[in-house]
Every structure is written in structure tokens, then in C-alpha cells.
Amino acid sequence: MDHKQTIAMLTWINQVDPRVMLNEANVDVWAYAMTNTAPDVAKQAVLEHYKANESIAASPGAISKRAANIKNSREAKTNALEALPPIKHPNSWRSRNPAEWDRLFEEGQEQRRAELMARGLL
Image 1: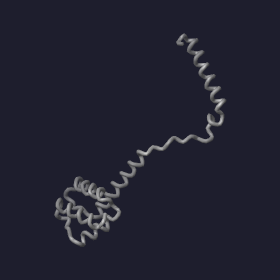
Image 2: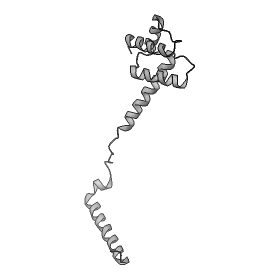
Image 3: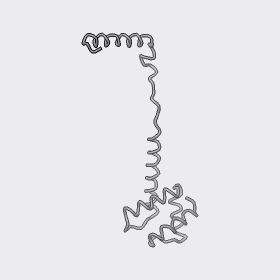
Image 4: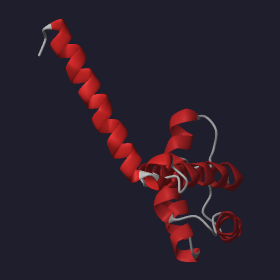
């Protein structure tokens, strides 16, 4: 967040909680704490803070930590949704011996067919 975004956020917080003052020193401290935080993440962190701790005033450190947790959970969710393609083992028996694989597969099918015919199921 830049300086202007920090002022806007502090104005918004001050309207909810007058204990968080909007003055130059407070803006500098909050701007420093929220340097690497996106405004939407900061806003979500403030909302979650007041949802969990209505009687405790928001502080730059608490909101910064909560924002980092929100950012990490969003990244983890995004990474979890990106599925990796299955990895084929380069030394698998099937890829090294395709003719033998096909022969054994056919042989297994013939045996299964014979067993089902012997039972009268085919």
C-alpha cells in the first residue's frame, strides 16, 4: 500500500473505531507496516480483526500479521488448485517392453474368457 491508500484505510478504520487516530505519525507507522500489503488484503485483515476482537483497537502489527496470513492462504489455495500432470516413470516395464505387454494382456484376456465360459457366464 502506498501513502494515499494508507490514509484512505486509516480514515475508514477511524470511522469504525475512533481509537485509531488519523494523524501524520500514525499514517507513517501504518504505511511502513503495510508496505508489502495489497489494499484489498489489508481491508479483509481489518474486517477479520474486528470480527474476532471487537474490543481491541486495530494496530499496524496485528493487521500486518493477519494480512500476511490472508495472503499466504490465498497463494496456497491458488497453488493447490493448479494440478500437476501425472509423471510417467521413464523406466516403466510397459514402456520398455510394449510388445511383451500387449502379448501378456491378450493372454490374460483369453484366460479370463475361458474361465467365464467354463462357469457358463459367457
